[in-house]
Image (cartoon, rainbow, N blue to C red; front, side, top):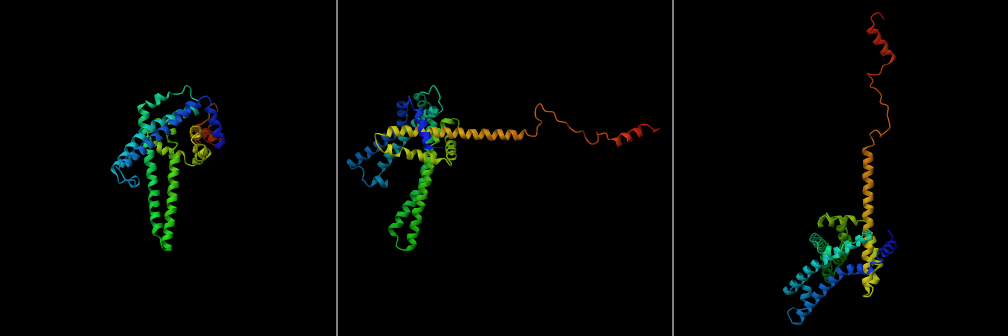
Length: 303
């Protein structure tokens, strides 16, 4: 799938709805930034009043710092998850040309959607955290080995530790890209559980991550600036939703094609409708000239 075609067609879908769609796409980002800045402000107050040492921000030795981090993380996930699902819901409706569009308040006030979006967000972040754990372990080990390496053998092991760190980071990035499709898949499959959506997203994005990477690279420079961030975020989200919608239709087409071929093969042995076929009689019922002569001789004693 070409990146230019996705960007061009997604831009056409936003005509007449650009302002409303931009607001929906910026709501999750605004909620994320709000709680991040609130957490940083609380840390600044704790440092100002001497309730916490600067080193505790990185070591995690302060109980107050851990409590603040936990509370802000819970609030951030609770508010961001339904907003992200609402964004995916609206963009998938735009890609499907559904009219009229579902009101945003109905999506956000639905208890079913809130529970599923919250469960999906918790599972996604947990899976990403588990995938990041090997990278953190190998990175810390590599840094400690590099500072104490003296012999060639120790340097060799240090290089391997750095390579394992790089590989672990690539695996984590691959998982993050795969999980980016989870909210859109939940919109298309509302009957699936969050855990099943996570597994489906990983399987669905297999071999398709390069398209998402290309879209992110195309909007990387506009998103780096404050002025271009709202427009780039909206266009990137709409292009990603369109890409996932096309992939879903491709999978459905391939599935229907496979099912139709299986049905044809199952009915291949049956006699076609409206076409008669001559069925040969059994060998013991076929009357040959020799058998007719033998039958007449037995029935007629004078023969």
